[in-house]
Image (cartoon, rainbow, N blue to C red; front, side, top):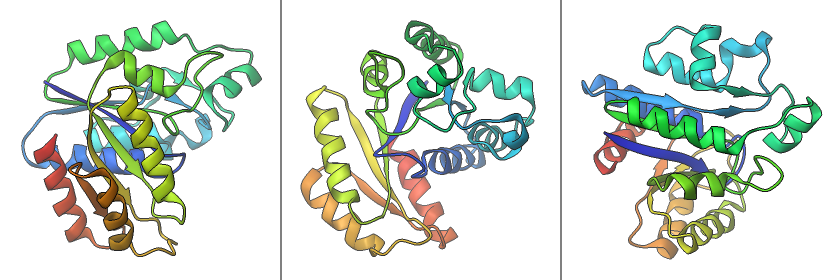
Length: 224
């Protein structure tokens, strides 16, 4: 069994989009895939059908129902803020030890490839003293880093890779996920990042080219 932690350089960059694409490709290839997104903010019952957990469940071929969402995303907060602030607003806490236990137990019980999707970027606070980075270090899994294609993403991506490397985490690949209104050509963005992180694989995922997107997912699954 393979487990991959999917993280990113920021929020709303496309972790779930990339994870769902990888799941779909694996299933189309006859392979087994599982996924969890333990922590979700900005989640409300009214928008559950279009939430990140719902996207993952659809890719997995599982029903988008409350009980299924609870299985893959046990920590759900309505406030669209970092988990520590969202929990505080709602008079709740996120138990870091319980988060680690849930992640590890899920990994131990899954077959095939398991994707553990983080929340926000690599340094998003989970509680008063832990960030997503602490979560990743504790699990020690290979990372798939999703970056955007906006102006500034080169610096954000290189900063993220530097932090991850200093914490002795293995980055399996970087995916530059093209935004719908990006002002920077995707190939230029990929080339610039790749020059600074060689030999780390850097792949560009075009939003409006399904055939190219399929090729990227095929290459990623071969790496992972």
